[in-house]
Image (tube, rainbow, N blue to C red):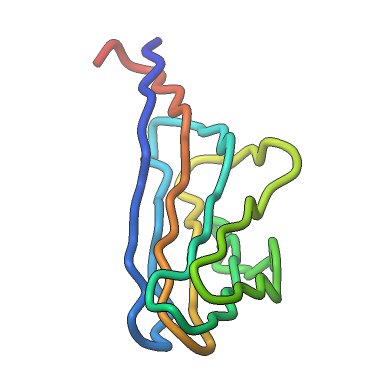
Length: 110
């Protein structure tokens, strides 16, 4: 079993639903933090969702509102993710960067 520390980063410049992180099929993951930061001296509204292996969608945070150059931690507690689950982010307005700090627990030695 291997522990793999990662950070996953996306720059949101449009309103597309964007995959931030996908748990590999042979792993589970603990998301320690999700940091959202407005990066265009405007404002932004971010939505964070979790999609399970059966394609069910769960809202993690529906309204992360950011003022100009503001940052916010989305999670107040770690988020456990199961095999093949997907963490997605979307900016309904504005531009923002999103960074997730993840501990991936792989059942193989790699």
